[in-house]
Image (cartoon, rainbow, N blue to C red):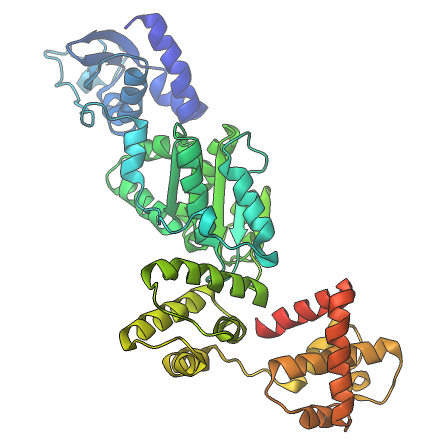
Length: 463
């Protein structure tokens, strides 16, 4: 290796370690020779040689081998003409210190293989775009994920997907990774959880291999971190994540993050980390609506038909489940799995009776008691009118329409009878309630604003 080539490698090391580290530790190194797979460097002091070998040798080895040099280890030797030292060290060096050996990984190992070993979070083959059911609550998140999975120019960085449990964040993360691996196999895609990021960071600190850690994470093309809220309150991990984030953004590399809430709402997350996460595209996966839950169930039934070709499912069962289990998609899918397994064991059709018997505990747990009073308060707040106007006798349109919406929601979301609902609305007759419910059903089909109002209120009440 020539001095000119070492000069070129020094420029790469400058970018990798930063100006301060480079000036202090890398710049004083003088390349002497490369012989028998050993690269020999001259250093001013033993201390510097030991420090560089412990903190930067892996990086230097990597850059040397990437440049086409066959290097198995490094040797640091104190220069004979070093600047003046303390008196105890002014005597001539009688023998050369033993070379500091930094062994390479098995032959053929490089960044890709190192990243494979770092891939602590396996991808689930079930979580692809083909199996992801798109509906109004998740259509923006799905579109953003699709765009990122194309692997083209980075248009928004980072992409942050957030939402509650079981709404599809991890599914989309896995789908992006699968798509990138299929369409752009040359890209280094790293997917792991925030917990695994922290574990790797602590392990690197313990083993004094921080430069190896930094280089690996900074050499990826796409970094995907799931459940980033886990690093909240862990200061050292947040700092390293912050620096990794900045390094990748500076290189125009794609970062994809998921969390259980918006970055600004994650408690104990440093402000600078929140700021970085909010500088890209932040997308909310909303709670599922009835139509999306039904679509998910229908999609799962098609998949189960291959495993249970003889099982039949009665009309109305999927609609019943989509209506009753509204909080969590995982619970919804688990309920259907249990139904198919139970029906296959007992050799029965999946009808309403079997569904209610088999899923009695799930249905009880998923049933949230929504009261008429709660609906009235929510509707009055939504339309910015007083609760007394919802219940009172005024027939102005600005009061009558919200009142009918509230009656409709009471009929849909509670088990109260029409006469009882009427009594809660100022002693009105059950026919008045019936008329109000019917009117809102008609308007939902023709008036987009009413349909949106009802859906928003329903989500808020079921959340």
